[in-house]
Image (cartoon, rainbow, N blue to C red; front, top):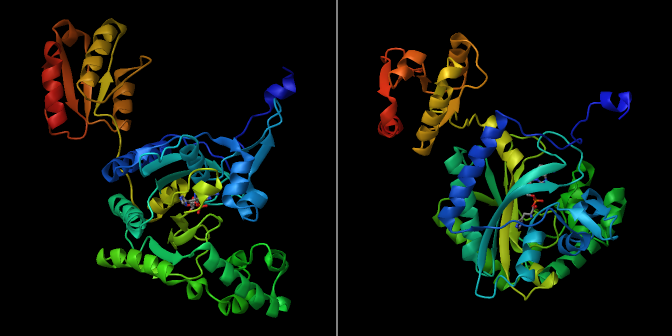
Length: 432
Ligand code: HAM
């Protein structure tokens, strides 16, 4: 290695972040909550590869979507020339796995995942190139009941995390109908935009015939009058689609969940039909969509599986954690229960074995490592957030004892405990 190459510090790729302590503790806290939530709803975990064939996303998400057009990390496998892509989302991967392993042979499956996704977007607060999604997918179920269940599941999560609906998060709901209904709407949309072609920007003109629906998504304020007067898909929905939407609404109404039907809600992926929804917040500026999802009844067949309906959503973990910050929700401090203070090498073995016994009884113990004075060790014990310090003084240990000091409550007297009965006082500590 040359001197210069040694001197250049290596850095993480722009838009891809290290998640370090103490912040990583918030991730673990949130992931634990998500796992517990999924257990309560009877969803099973699924883990699919981060790298998939590029064709999966081109076929699954739609060639004219922003993600496929300009945000995918695609590359050629130099070993065999395969075209590969780092997954920009995980619905397509889950559907591929479900089709490949014929997972729906005995009925529906409810699955969830947490993992890294990759999109080559311009990084900013709440928008990264590597980000993490938690997602839930219910495959093989056609009814509005499961759409409603997924939305209620989101609400249960917000409540459990201490977020307030209406203040921190809001639900927007829409129906994208069925392909033939969208086709009729699309024709009407093209006719409308053609009539106002002089008022469309370049981006919109380019999309006019390929993906006119996405023009509705434009942030260009000068086009808003044309967008506002555009025909709305909801007016093209047939009786079945309207009944599906109404059935979802009935459950949400009965559950007292407030939402806004937003006929302009178009998701950034082509696989959706019928129910679509987003949970948004105005606490995160431009990156206000925390969670999004909907039905994708044709995707499984499109990707080569036996036809089966499906619905799901995904939420951005980074955005949710930012939102929790903004809403001043702080996870409980996660220090160890006990900090083990080890004044000298003579007691080290005894101390190590004692804390092992404590840990196997369920007590969390942070062992002081690397020597240091008693003063330093007590300082570290305080900083660790531990409730107790367990002091392995040489004299005490020689007598078969150890001292327990209360770090958070000065008034509590120090206690002397017998090393022989660790399991007994471990139980006491856990009860306290
Ligand atoms: P999506 O709306 O593209 O949907 O992404 C879902 C969520 O991921 C967003 O609401 C946002 O919170 C987060 N997210 C997206 N891009 C970024 C980024 N660059 N940085 C940080 N967070 C981001 C999907 O991906 C669908 N697969 C959802 C779904 C599941 N639909 C049905 N099943």
